[in-house]
Length: 541
Ligand code: NAD
Image 1: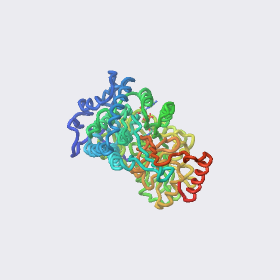
Image 2 (image 1 turned 90 degrees about the vertical axis):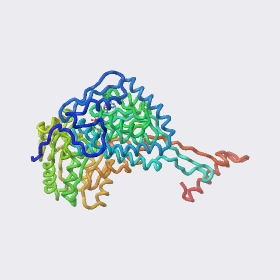
Image 3 (image 1 turned 180 degrees about the horizontal axis):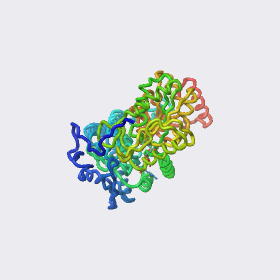
Image 4 (image 1 turned 120 degrees about the horizontal axis):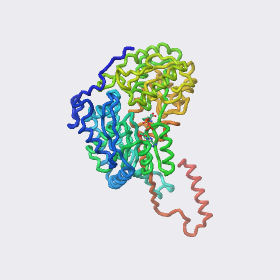
């Protein structure tokens, strides 16, 4: 292995560009207490209790985060409800302006966002930067397409010329968001922005490990001019605060594990409210016999090791055509071994730390179990405490079988199994194995054939000649999981329509739905049947 050592916990360099005057990541070994307090002060919490968080980079304390009690969650929803009533009456253009201001603010503060996310999650700086970029894309997309998605639409009425139908998009009310730690800035904002644009308020419970990054999002929204009360942040253990959110919200937007998602869905079913669930995956990557090997190896590295594999759409299973298997695997291993690992703020780090001891334990257990049952480690397979507390080497396994933990369970780490295939039909069947259906990648120089194969794959997104970015960053396209990977979609039209109720308003001109004076009910029924036949002949809907 030739992976380089980088500084552990080294403070980030400030590049040119505007930033928050209170924020200077070079001022101490972690974040300035005054800066941290300016963020944690935004949590709706009166309990007086706090929970300490530490940085995965070096184990140093980061923040004492105030904890929200039951009363605080109720107060957050009350405040949000009051603010939402006024917000729903503002014009769409006014709401879109807030998102456009946020777009620029996020780009202005990208260094600050990146610093805080790296301190909290241990991820590589390049992965943290993409969080800011993705939020900017989302804000601009929804602001610019607001009218397309939300304007009242005319639909055909039952009696052409006499029945006018208008379909309004009415906000749900207060949307509850429960977000995970792996992309703390993106996941805190990317669902909330369309919810706000559609006229809703938001109460959000970010994961306890990454509160500061989520709170920075709340501060930027305020700076962008979002009226007070519309974005309430509560904090506390998911098992306690999560169900309180489900209990109070008008719609729930959950991102996290399939197990928790199932319990959120049960809570929503009891209250008969809607929810969208963005859950786990065991995503396959298929390298077909006509793939450009160098391109596929580059893509496979990003597909597998972005965010140290703690990415819902990252790939953990690779199926490679027999004809190119040896050449491809050699290049994939070589590129993997050329990666720079580390725990710190340096842009040169290709793969950062895992977030916690729990994550490190899971990854270690999956690899050890596979090796004990006969899998071969082609590269990696070890924790690297010399580089960072929770750094684990990017790992390629061969010979993974059904009895191994990493075969069907999501590892959520930098570990992939490679397997050869002789028939594409068999490869598609293998890609569809298991209960997940989030994302797949296909490498082939024949776009038409790859798109035909994509239709056979039971995943909500399929990327051709790209790891995951083609769909993930194309905000106009829906994104989400089939089967146990989720319910509903974020992004695109579906990503904003989920936060609205449709309301159909019918205006009847002239005669209504009753017989003309003197006409019997029987004759009226015959006239209706006749008109139905006529409409069918005319090819009308
Ligand atoms: P998790 O389910 O443990 O936690 C997610 C969130 O749910 C956290 O905020 C947590 O505090 C909260 N929570 C915990 N128990 C709860 C309960 N009983 N009721 C309500 N909320 C509760 O997931 P995680 O380990 O933080 O995140 C990793 C998982 O998220 C992975 O499976 C990953 O694939 C998935 N994920 C999916 C997407 C996607 O878009 N599909 C994106 C990111 C992460």
